[in-house]
Length: 361
Image 1 (cartoon, rainbow, N blue to C red):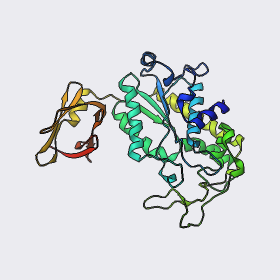
Image 2 (cartoon, rainbow, N blue to C red; image 1 turned 30 degrees about the vertical axis):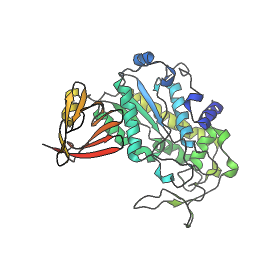
Image 3 (cartoon, rainbow, N blue to C red; image 1 turned 30 degrees about the horizontal axis):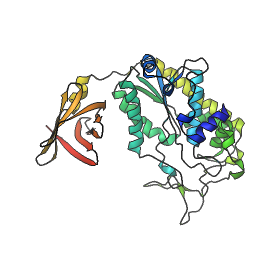
Image 4 (cartoon, helix red, strand yellow; image 1 turned 90 degrees about the horizontal axis):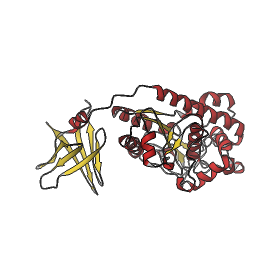
């Protein structure tokens, strides 16, 4: 199990190592392994769809691979699927990780992009099926604001969404086993989890202790952000990975898996939020929007699509992609609500052009 997971993570492509259709008799199914007719049958309102989001390229010190977040999230996903019946969606291998952007190889999406990726993936599955429940396994507290935003937005669209509070799940065990004086990244805890999950990729001979160094002109910083300071770290470590062990990692990992399984049981039993009617969906955005003098965009319902008309321009019809979101091919319309939660602006993107128009009564 651990060795095959390592091979999958290093390749970082689902296509080279597709998982089995089921998971040890639980009835779990990996979506990429079945046809659409089977997906239609299995994606019911009672089914829980699991989506993992973990960076496959983000610095974790000199001793852990860039795929560390993906490795952890993918392992948790597999173990969860072995314990409770879920529909496992393909993973999202990028996320919102700006604190590590100064280190070579690290990737991050903008907050809005990370949010939109999840907000597009879940509703796209829901729109073509009866799926209404989604559980997101996202790695670390940095992703929490993104996931909170996703949850609140998708619940308005009638989808029940929960996400794994990763650090909260580890906290009780971490308090018992901690040897490092402090830490949060590529540290004792994270290194321990990798020693348990994928020991072949951990290079303990390179592990160093780092609690923040004096700044240097070319020094890299974990957590640099506007209005705040991070921690200068030549190694990219914050903590003491040298005291990590696989035994500690097993306790931490099992605690996270247990938390996810409990969350999914609660999600499965929770009442579904009311799904807005099509009439209500279009009524929220229908109206006139002024971009400039003489350039008025009229948004109106046209069957199950939204029609936009502008002077001297071809009429555009867009599919609903969620509350306040419509699109087709390279054209997208996003409607932005004001403080009173009523739509106040239209952001219309078509190819390389972008127009902001203000709603008028």
